[in-house]
Image 1: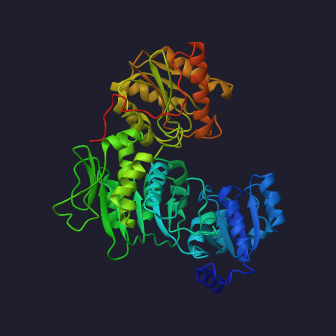
Image 2 (image 1 turned 45 degrees about the vertical axis):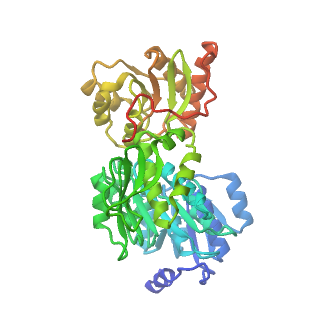
Length: 510
């Protein structure tokens, strides 16, 4: 591909520019790949999808749209890919994937779906974008911010890594005022020129190191969330890494650094003081006053009073306030918000032992926040560790652990961490050949080591794909296993599974 062609593609920054006839290849047939192919067809490009795994239903629809799907091994380079002017890469493809390395060697333009969405965001009307990332809490914060914006009267959609492709939102016939875009480190790795209204990195801890190739590369990807921010760069005052990202970021002149934390808010910060969620950032007289947004009692009702959830509330409120949402709408949104399933979800009780599903805790940082919320825990931990070390997590929480049940393919590092830092804690390894029985065995073992008043906590600190279809599948199997135990106990302490954890003897946000 010539340099002139590359410059022509760079100039395509509107839905209304001429995309017709561009030879485009979409790598991957997942949700984002399908949305990218559908979008490019609508723009008039000549589109081919190249994937390692097929999907009969999506392939059928794409055929109707005139899109050819080529399913091949990663080592092969289909002719359509070799001849492509534009390549749209699935966010899950590693930077070292042969298709991406080949595209780089051929000098082809490679975008992610987020960059394509930014370029064509003006199909209906160009919404403001709020970007959300972090090792833990992204989805909850994205949902909270969207809920707050909606309460403020704005038409809003939570999109991106949360499940709904950004490309679907920008093509919605009704259009949106604001998109709250959750971005994974994979999406940020290849993020192009995006100019968000505001952005936040909630926290930073080791995760996906195998994909990125190391902690620094992972950190650098996360830091891209602040690039070109125009109004507010929101950071966690308790996480120096996020503050450093803001200090180093190339933002638009006039963009403000806005902190959030669980203590008394300083100037240009949101925080908590005497049970009040307070804004000392988005008011004229912030040198001497603060606005009340909500109370800890409001957070308690919504299951958001634990420290890590309270931080998510503060970050979301900062984004919403940056857009101009009034304090009354923030409070209304907090009171009416409900967490998704598998996020610190109270499943039920057996003989005075509570069972909590936090299957969404797919890394140590997330599991740390969950463990902090409970005083006496039998911990179900393990899975696919993705190159991270759980030893510091074990060492930090040994005082609250009654026992641990270790699941997953990466059990050896977890067992070694307990041997080193918690040798007196009873430990059960689940070496179950039938993955369908893993959670049933784990729940039975956990209950055997628990006493009345304890919490059996599924917070694996690891990904789920080794033994389950997803973190949701893992959580559902946990919930079913708990229901089975309740039936054996006669159902006397049954629970409908729809509740949320109260402040379970652990620290509330202060």
